[in-house]
Image 1 (cartoon, rainbow, N blue to C red):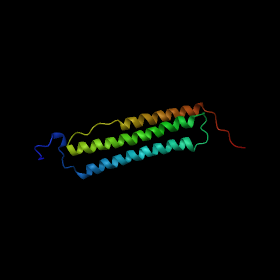
Image 2: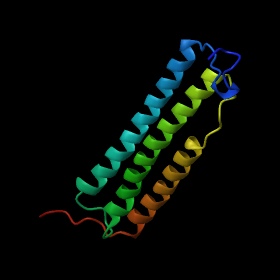
Image 3: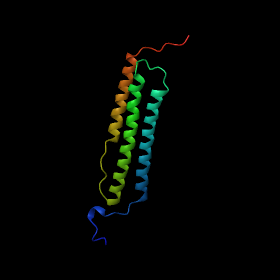
Image 4: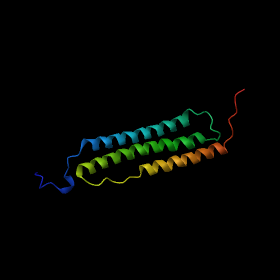
Length: 126
């Protein structure tokens, strides 16, 4: 199939490798963020002895684990969308990952304050 017979959506442009590598670095940064959220959630649910409120560890930890998984999936999808847009010479698609992360961290902070404020202080061992 010659270039003139190729459908327009399959036209690919030569992309400066720096843009593709920047996209890869951004994906890796989102991956580190996702991994940190999962690790924080696991640490809260498994390693913290007492948080002051029954079920408080799970209330704080499980959403962090879920958010980490969601960010990993969404960042992979976004990375692929950007790579395709770069190769086809299209505008880069907008995304909501930063807003999602910000809203969730603010929610986790508010929830954390509520758990600490409503919880019973830990009793020290004699």
